[in-house]
Image 1 (spheres, rainbow, N blue to C red):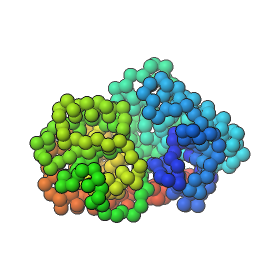
Image 2 (cartoon, helix red, strand yellow):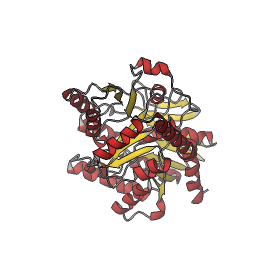
Image 3 (cartoon, rainbow, N blue to C red):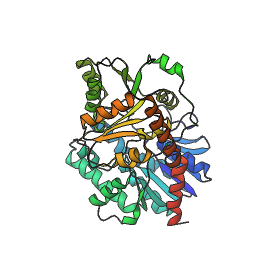
Image 4 (cartoon, helix red, strand yellow):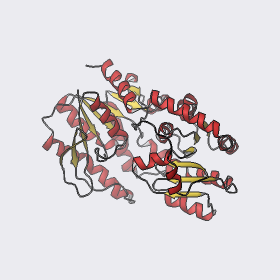
Length: 400
């Protein structure tokens, strides 16, 4: 089949990967012809490129990543679908398409999807990760009424146009049905997050030396540091263990709340917290393999069911997990309990978190067992190849 991915961004596939490019590559390895339409890199012109055997149409657009102004970022995201559509008409209008894949965010690409779907009669698979505009409401972000209506309108159009809506967990599926009861139930399918990585290799002691972590129990939090991540949970945990010289909390990543997190760590004089910027995947995975505990945190006010993909990275690197999540979320039961990779509590039940952390802190054998269990579960359920297999079952059950 001919697959078309509409992506907000995509790295150079000859050098590294990302969540959606990993799935695109798995589809390509499965014998399908894959095209990706995505944003051009800085200084790159709109045009056709070939990377890792996949055809890419890279489109020059206004910059949105790293832009702090909500309005400038919003303008860039509004313009993108029009620029994508114009580029598609110029470069790909005669190319066959059987299935269109569009992940959220952004939901605004639906304008481009409807044009391509009408022209090619392709099926549309919506990979639902952020539910708009509810994800903003639950983060406490008060959108301009016009922006709120615009996002809601685009979301409803996407649900109506979609032939499949892939959700991260069973509760995610139920939540979507509750806020959009007009969706045909058969459209909503389970599509967990995934990760493609090389075969596991053990930790490299040189990495600990490089980052000054030798002799420490390292608890790592990696990924986006935003409103949904509940940075206060990380501060509370670091404060509780501030007098334990053997524990280091390593925060790896960037986001709109990182400055706030660093400031709080300084205010509380938390010398046990260290910060690193986002890094290339290979370097981050090398660092993760040396970690002793992986942290997951969600803000207690964020009530839209969600499943942070970092837990799958921890599984793939054999890192046991402590998760501090919110209520109305099946993350703990769907990921942690089934994989037996660690422990979780909801709405920051502090005593339960500390007890769970102590269990891992004081028992290297338990850490090793949890890590191994998580790795086996990852190999069975969350590789890009396994998700590709599930996706093909869904497509073949209702079509060619």
